[in-house]
Amino acid sequence: MKGGQSGQNGHGECCRLKVFSLGMAIGITTGLWMLLLGWLSWLMGWGHNIINIVEPLYRGYGPSFVGGLIGGLWGLVDGFFFGIIIAFIYNQCLKCGICRAK
Image 1 (cartoon, helix red, strand yellow):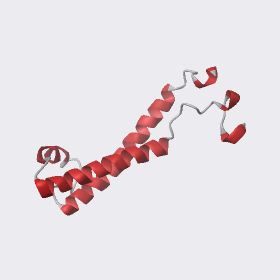
Image 2: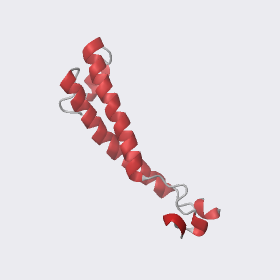
Image 3: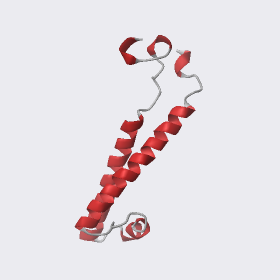
C-alpha cells in the first residue's frame, strides 16, 4: 500500500473525514462564535436573546469579557465533540463501497 493508504488501488480512504480534524474545525469555529457573541453583547448590546438561551447550558457564559472567554471555551469543547460525532457518523455511512468502485 502506497503512502499509508488502504483499499484497492490506494483509494480506500478517499472519501473518509479525519475525525479529529473535523472536531477541531467545528470546535474552533463554535468557540470563536461564542466568544465574539459574548463580547459583542457586552460592548454593543447585540445578541442578548441568544445569550439568554445558551447561558443555562454554558455555565459562566454571559455578556462580559470573562463571560465571552468562558463561552468560547465551552463552544470549543462542545463543537469539538459535535464534530467528532458528525465525522464518525459520516464515515460509517460511507461503507456503501463508493471508494472501492474506483
